[in-house]
Image (cartoon, rainbow, N blue to C red; front, side, top):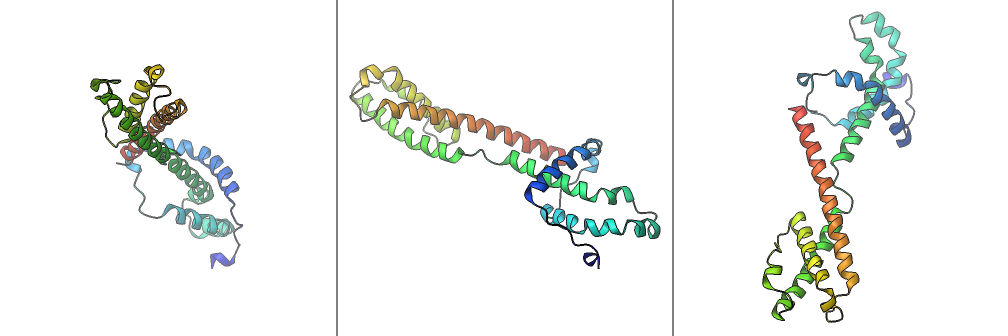
Length: 211
């Protein structure tokens, strides 16, 4: 059996990353030359395929002369590229998964902004009844639960509080530090939402390329 010929050396994550990047760079010209009709969706587990390819590669190398002699029609160039293709696939897949992963902190920023919006909105409604804020000033608060709605509402309320802070300071159980914190969180949520949209555009581009 092939597994009895040569025992594959363990592949560490550091080796996989370094060799994967080098292999991907070597394979890019061939990847760029592919036509749309040559690109197909994967119908197998890529991680398993990469692991198996790297495991048998040493044994396959040891049989190179025999394959060349007994199987003259085999594409030896492709066989010789087995390791490069496996490492390149691992690197490309890791890059793809990184690109489509939700930005770190998105849910945390959303939840904090959502809670802060409720607090600021309750205070704003109270100030409307006290004739400090006008109903029209809080009418623009959407109240939706989407990422963008929550961030925009929080920023609208922050702006309203900030513009009237001289009249409000010391009269509300909401310190200025809380207002500043809400602004920072809402702005971060908007930034992360932008990253998420770029990720979605990237995914759509990948899907279009596969179709």
